[in-house]
Image 1 (cartoon, rainbow, N blue to C red):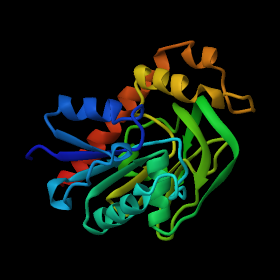
Image 2 (image 1 turned 180 degrees about the vertical axis):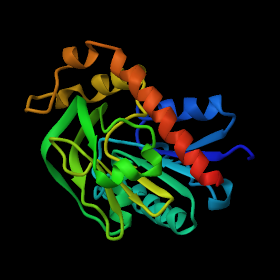
Image 3 (image 1 turned 180 degrees about the horizontal axis):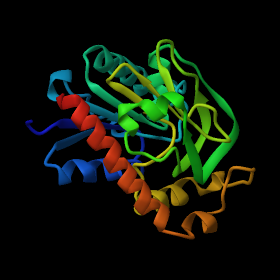
Length: 236
């Protein structure tokens, strides 16, 4: 199989493709990106195979403050219609859910830190999660949540958030949680968004988040497995 052309959409300087880009580089795939916050233009769809939509602190409907959200949603809809592999992470998953007809609303709780995710029944059968444990630690940093879009399948959940992952067909995967974050990514979040650590039953302190590097090593291995699964599915 020729190298994949992977393109990431990035909403703020401190949330990039992180471990996704590392996985791609290790497997010889080409990686490009659009820094939407810098006004960079979107690529032609034919220039990419996979579209990875990253996180960000804004809400999906903040069009006034972030007018590029409108164009991004149109591009995301075209990528889905064009059969590209789409992976949305956190805000990216919320954008994908909205484009597909779901709703994005405030979650009952903020969820920030290292907290467990459980695979739903469909998730335990999903090709993307082949080889995953039924429950695993992931990193979270969100206050909003998505509903499962019409025709999509719920794949995962957590105690604080009923919808942690969904798929739509074989080409769209939305993850509310982060397997993509490196330790450096988490430090950037603590620096830029640490003011959000204001307490709550599912909000950890900066000290608790930093307490161990082991979860980041584990999520990196889980991310590699997930992306390898998607790569096999893409090439089959």
